[in-house]
Length: 146
Image (spheres, helix red, strand yellow):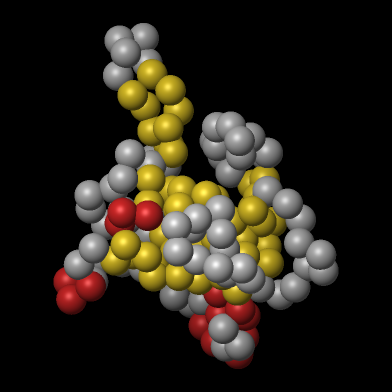
């Protein structure tokens, strides 16, 4: 289900990278984490960072293994996944989908809507800063309230 609004920072969604992206860019559907707040002058756009269930080789400072309190459904059922802080995109809402969990006992569709914690979001931001070559700024994350 394509989203119609800007989700909260730390929300996990899926992104369809398969339409127009070309390798070595991301080229498949994958889980992502929203890292931007809603910005009025950027209607319909959301900044995200990619995640992977596969351990990167080699693990770099812009990677971080994260464990979720509530695991994602198939095909991402691994108890943890890797933040890919070097894979940051601003994408249209049309590329983003909620993660479906199936239907409840009344037939209503359920979605994974639990954002990651503030401490986990700081880890994501640290990965992104490393991925952008801005590692020196990570020291400011500890004192920052999200």
